[in-house]
Structure formats: C-alpha cells, structure tokens
Amino acid sequence: MLAMGIHSYLALNGYKLKAGVGEKSLCNINSLFNCDTVALSPYADFLGVPMAIWGATTNLVLTAVIVFFWLQLSKNPARLAARALWLACLIAGASLVMAFISTTVLHSYCLFCIFTYVLSAIQWIAVWKIQSPNPWGELADDFKSAAQPPFGLALTWLAIPALSFLAHAAISDSYSPANSRTIITEALRDWQTSPARDFTEQGLTMYHGTGSPRMVIVEFADYLCPHCRHAAPLIHNFIETRNDVQLIFKPFPLDGTCNAGAGFKQKGDGLRCRLAATVLCAEKIGHEGWKANDWIFDHQQSLSVDSFPMDLQQVAQLTNLPVEQLKTCVDSSEIADAISKMTGEGNNAKINGTPSFFVSGRRLNGAQFFPVLDAAYRSLKD
Image (cartoon, rainbow, N blue to C red; front, side, top):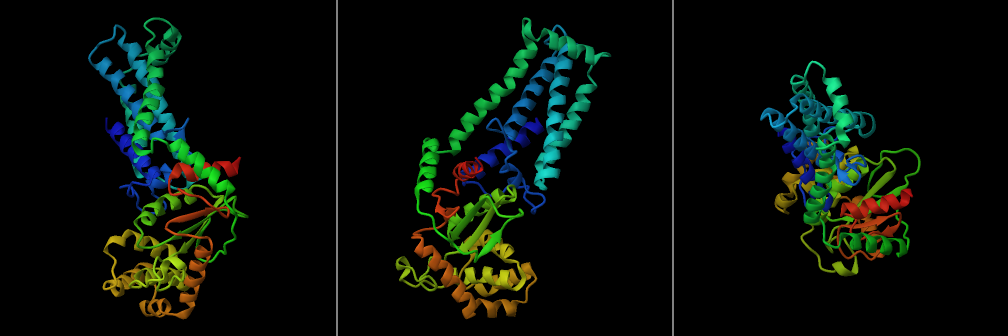
C-alpha cells in the first residue's frame, strides 16, 4: 500500500508537470536527484502509460492476491502464494531495469523511485516467506492452468494492463484539454508551415550532447511572467534527458525601458530589465547564469524594485560572485546592448507575449505543453 501511494504521487505529479500546471516535485534536490527529470524522460512511459501507473496497478493486484491468501479465500493457497511470487518478481525486475536506466542512461535519480525499489525488494522477501516447500513447482502448475477455469492467473495478468490503461485514460483527461489531439496536430501543422528564422546563440545555452544538435529550442521569456516560470522546469528537464536537444534562452523583458519593440513603447519600473541583466552578468562573470535564472524564477512572486539590491546580493551569494562586480555589470552598457540585441531578435520574429518558442527556427505554439514539444521532437527523430 505504501508502494501504491508513492507510485500514485509520482503519476499525478507527472501528469501535472506535462500539463504545465504542476510545481516542482518534493523529491527534487539537485540535477542528480530530480524526480521531474526522470518523469519527463523517454523511459518514463511504457505503451504510452506512465511507469508510475504500471507500478501502482501492479502493486494493487499484488495486494489483492495477498489479501485473498491471508483471508484463505482460495482452495489452493500454495498456488495463490506462487501467483503473488510471480507479481513480486515482476515488480522487482521492473525496479532493476529502471534503476539500470537511471544509472547508465539518465544519470539522474528519483528518490521516491529509489524508495519503491527498496520496497519491491522487501515485498519479494515477504512473499517468498509464505511460499510452499516447492514454490517453483507451484509456479509451473499455475502457469499451466492459466487457460483453465477459473482462469485465475490469466485474469490476474489481464487486470494489470486493464487497470493501467483505464487509470491513464481517466487521469490524463483531467489534466489535458478535451481536444488535446487537435491542439497537438494544429500546433505541429502551424510549426511546419511557419517561416524559418535565424537566431544567434547569444543568451543562456544548455546542451549535453556532442556534435550538432538534432533539435534547437530558442525560448524568449520574461522573468516576471508566471507562464515562463511554470514552463522553465519542463523545458529544462526535457533537455536534461535528451542529449540531442539544445536550448538557447533569451531574456525578453516586457518593458519599454530596455525593449524597443513597437508593443513596449511605455516604460515600466525597469525591474524586468535588471533581472535579465543579472542573469546575463552571472553568466558573463562566472558562467553561473542558469543558477541565477533558476533562483529568480523560484522567487518570482517576492521580487520588487525595492528588494532588488538585496536580491542581487542573494544571487551573488548563491553563485559565489563578487556582488560589487555583479552590480557594475548589471548597470553596464555592454549588458544593455546584449539585452537590446536579444529583444530585437524577438521583435523581428514578431513576438507579442512570453514564453515564445522557436524549434529548429520555426515558431512552435504551445511548446510549454509537453505533448506538443515531445511530438515536435519525435517528428524530427523520424
């Protein structure tokens, strides 16, 4: 039951994350231990259903079998115990496979997943203790009788995919628009037919591969934009688990103070511009732009013009950069010119809101919606 609870939490968090409505998982500690990175990896689903759902339903069926054994509701308890061993072996085997993938492919771990791996080992040991003197013989007999009434083993195995697909259908409908397939199709069609644009690599870049990337995402975002804050973890985790995708992040302050676009003639308080400058300076001085970027998004709701001097000190402390050097850089004409060039790129691309995404040079609407971004990625892979 504990395993079911953990798998259910991971599944719900994954659905929210993919829909762009969730917050960071409780078990996100750093880049090495990050549940969201694992949840958005290509290995997080099997037959289109999240592995967490498969884990929850398999543990549910195992619980039912154990309850039947415990209450002595079977005429052949040894056979029922053997069936529980089948399920325990399946769960333990899946845990070993997922642990292997995290270690050798993703290089990132989900702490809650690790907890379920430990629970699967405990379950296997506990189930083994209720076996008859000849459990393997009982397993073989149970397998032979799968096609005979009352079809106990067959129904047990069929219950797992049936429950998994039903749960996936019910939960995904709650977190995805009713016309999600239409949204994905239209987004891909508009993306493939939109004019291609050239962008410089100026900004923050993230790429974990070697050679030329298969897919390049250019994102224009404003640091006080709530939608940009929600999109950030999804985009970053998408990059972390796909070493053939590059992200170029370009600050695009929605403020005429530093944005000369036609839609931003009115000057604001300048905070959006100074936050963009802070990130670019952290990158310029110590290659710590992503740390500053993440801190600003995490504290977005408490940022203000009055608190900016203190916030800048917090960023300097986080990135181990000299605060005076950071202040000088933020006010420099060099950084102002860099912001002007990046906002100019955005304005030339006719950006009228943030976040805005361009994939392989073409605008992709709804890229912060995981299924849209993943569909574009798969189309390039094909």
